[in-house]
Length: 379
Image 1 (cartoon, rainbow, N blue to C red):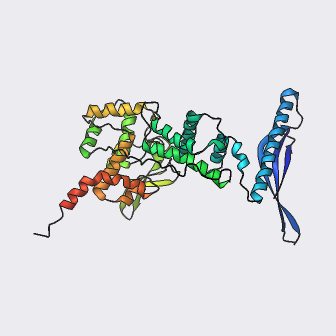
Image 2: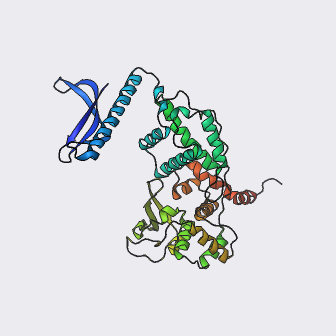
Image 3: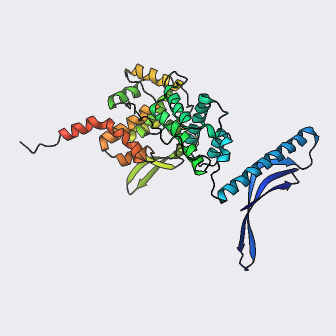
């Protein structure tokens, strides 16, 4: 492959855009003639075709320097790649510039993107933002793990074991990419053992507690409605807040009449269609216009947890309830009454069954009763 630095001029905009002209040899066209194989790789750098004033001339000078620096790096990369040589010369580059480029080229969900962003902030808090790739060694990684174990969130709580695990894995993914690109020879994270994830006890409400909540007034009816919808459907806050009346559909198939909620799961971007029972339908309330929100005036706020806590205390429930408690409540009620783990996976929108299986321990007492209630065959 041969690379040439060129500009594509747009006279209407008065700008020239730098790009790499990548020559990959020749191929024969339909007429049997040689045709050059070329690709363009734009650099996101432009120059003014007719610079006016000092600022535009200075901009052109800086743009040219940036483009030529990238051109030199591209040539080096091609040389080392074509000769299968390690690109250790790049170890002097900024680690976080590489991090940003890695994220930019990776197809990930918004949640994962936020996690990478949070991890980067913690890394900068740990050792600053002037770190070069060559400084990322075993000591840097191991001490970062210790930093995570001691780090406190804004509320004074330590990071959970699952958060520590998640953040460290993000660093590991970036380092694995550095190895793939032959910029470093070995991943310094590979010999570091992560602590085991300690799963917190999942709180949930029983039927009698649910009845108490339904009867008790809440100072924010939107929060109450959201919470009960989640209890009877298993939907996340991010999905309930976006539900419109057009998402509630009715079908009559061969005499079987059923209401469904049909929507796109925000977390995964996948469509979901779940049947709902009469309890859920009652909580939804009176139908309004198709484009009206089912729960109006509902916004994500840390204060919502305080409202839920106050509401539960008024009802006489001593448990601390959160939006997650509602999903746990639905999952527990469904599993207890059906023992259908696969159905639950579809209803609450989990990609993998192992994620749903964490709810199985919540129904242990019910399983014990079921086993002990089996007819005795041995005298």
